[in-house]
Image (cartoon, rainbow, N blue to C red):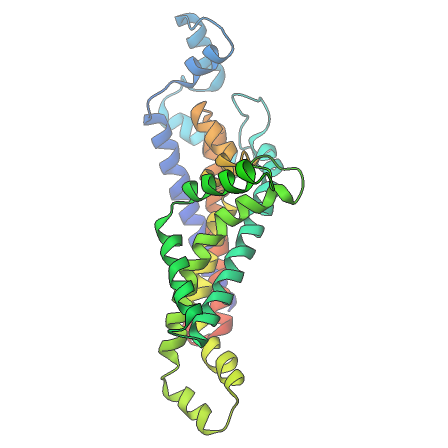
Length: 309
């Protein structure tokens, strides 16, 4: 198991290095000059002298490879740069916004997991029944309605028409309901169909027939024989979606003005705030790959045969 974990950690470092390098190059090739944007934002005339001085101050006057080497050296020593806009440490800003994203991701993950397990188990027990048909309808809606459109629908219904829940901000638990539903409902409905299909497929296997022949109860067969094997692909799906939620769901956080990593990233892109964009990408890559490594470890713990593949 230790060798398995070390291999995953090595893969994490390589992936983060590749992703951060690509991001650095692509940001420099993208249209838009951060020096011009900053001067315009502060109502300073973008003269040639002012642009040259600001580019030199930001380190943008150096050749691209020198900029990259300097940036990589600083990142490896824990100095992720300073935001062009706020003049604050990028790492500090990311850490300050991480709790909001973790809070939203946890709530969205809870919604997604409850729907996946609840609807998936109910639909498999009552296949072709009304619960199964209801689950199919939710899965169809979940896969066909984009998250941003679902968010707008929930805001219109529960905030504008009924006035039950706030539509933006982060103050108390009521502000968490709509973005969590937007984040987890669609994914949970789709994953429930995957769990249902797995449960029904495994229900005809020989080990299930053998359990029935030995006289085990239906509940025991359902949870300790079928569900134990059907949950493996669901763990992968849950882990993948959780990693993207933790990395900051850009669309949902923007729609609900949620002060997390995703909204911070969008603001940095519009302002060409290079240190923030690069810092966010590294941060997100660590979160995504780290959760994927954790999912792999959990899968091996559930089914040790996977270690040999």
